[in-house]
Length: 253
Image 1: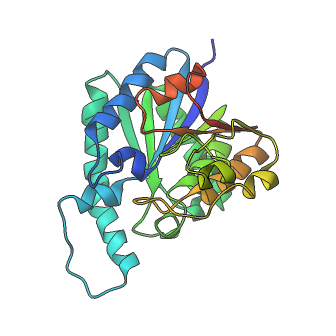
Image 2: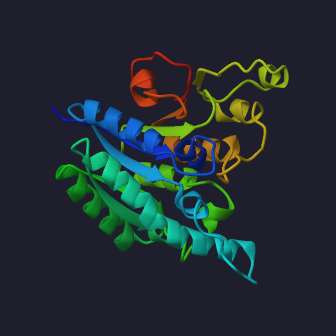
């Protein structure tokens, strides 16, 4: 039986559980779910969190621009982030690998082919690729997007069956219910223009995304005929609960 391929994008707020440090418990929760699902699904992960991983133990002296400092923090934090993934996943019998990509990689046919070939070999050999933006050479996702667009481009390139974006809300809420402080999830979306009218353009506390960048990502995925789910990654068991339809989330057809 051919496994379904899921691209799981994990934002900084999910990985930190909205604190100031990476949550090992959350990474273990994600690993435990993947271990349970691995007979039916194969996973590619796009993970933010390198800057958050560095911030918890480093304060950089600098005279430069904030963006340069964030690039330096990402460089320090990326190995720590990968180590936490590797340690937690290994205990569950899962193997991980690191892939650092930037937007320019998606603009050249040779690069795209290399990415495809490498990720396919990794997945075929039961290694979970963990992708982040190469922040040392590119700043797009640091400035805006929190890896949402990178996840969508990767999903389209790898022809995945489903793009799951884990964030800190139960999907996208109707604007009216959010204003009334009684948020109600928009469960199913078939028109992204209508959806655009429902969202606020606020950014998340750790990440640089917000719902605007998630809708942009869903649009990229949609053009590649891929469904997008926006789910609450702060909840335990969020992947399995979404697959079993036991939790509120937004499906973008």
